[in-house]
Length: 512
Image (cartoon, rainbow, N blue to C red; front, side, top):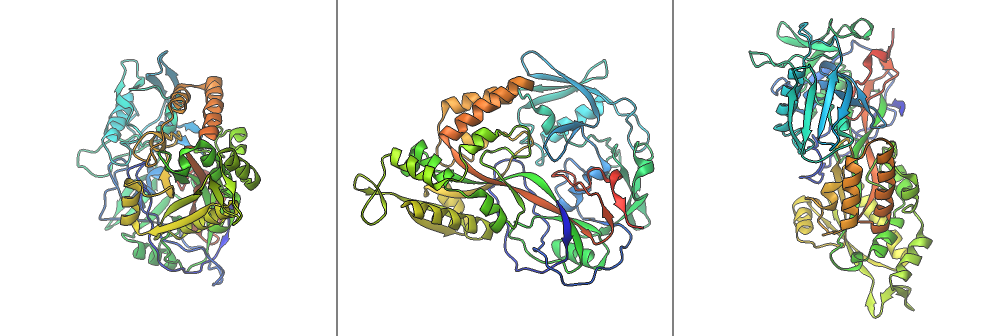
């Protein structure tokens, strides 16, 4: 999605996302939901920001500003497009052993680093093994026991458990380390180059797209903190930034810009305490999932910056089962029927009772997050229409986490960044299973789906998500969207992705 977005500054709030789950989520660049305030200015020279005080290493570095440059300088074996399909980049082909535990990759012939050093399988093995120990990548590679270069020039990756969609996890930069410890070399569009006391990106002559890039050089402007980045963008010193319009960070940019949204794997969801209370019943959990108006939540509460989803897979992915999702789509009449099937009847006061026990739930939400509070309010209203008495418990982050850990909820609003293969294990049986869900059949189906490939994976996915719709262990709301902000009039045909804001920059159409 791409549209003109001049700016309006909003108030400051604080981003908080569930920790200890999914991939580490770097803090997003602050930004508001904009509205027209200025006459667009002529485009300036294209430049980007970086943090000179932080590492530029694409594997071990943790600066968000510097990580956004990774896709311009480095390439992985694969890269995920906006349907979350792994597209081969440095990998030419892959084969899998019969037990699914060993993947063998043949590398793209002729690929070279920016100094002309030919890419080898050893470079790939060294980079993946380094990533296994790096905070940014350790969790997604938890099932990788090792990577090694073969004598025939192939790269092997060994797993502790089969993963039929392993390439979706392998958009990890392949690097050539330098002896002086400076930023390693990559095979991407550009390379880092010093220019006196400044730093810039210079087109990599050993990349096949070098001759068609829109910019031969991209100056890098210091932007170490959010305030500095905003100032650099507003003044024209930085031409592009990324942001999350749904995040509670809301400091404002004051320049005119265009926006290109991109889908992410960041899931907003409703968790259930399946170990007790009303939500112990799968019929009740399904009813509560049916009470979620996901389309309205995305349209109103997230201002359109999301993709409604009833399953823990992006609806843009080929892994999404529409038939299973339809079984959980917003339908208050069906929700009421399920509650009746679970033994709840309306009393003379219009409230639901099971015998003499009233239908009462506590909905836990982080008070520092306006988007989650809005969704919680929307769900509470729908449940109350059904006759359920809802207490919305709004707590600051520390209290929210303590309440989750102590099981002091019936439902809660959560957020997690899933890996590129959309593995929901952490929510079903791992560290995010706060509600104590236990589903042996669902776990077995999940293992089957994770291991399968091709048509077998499609069949396994249908079985998994059909069972998910029956058990309703948690209720997905949507996958959030991020946004690339580009100063007005500089370029068009933008195609940012979750991992690379400058994906396919060689296809940009620039002004002038």
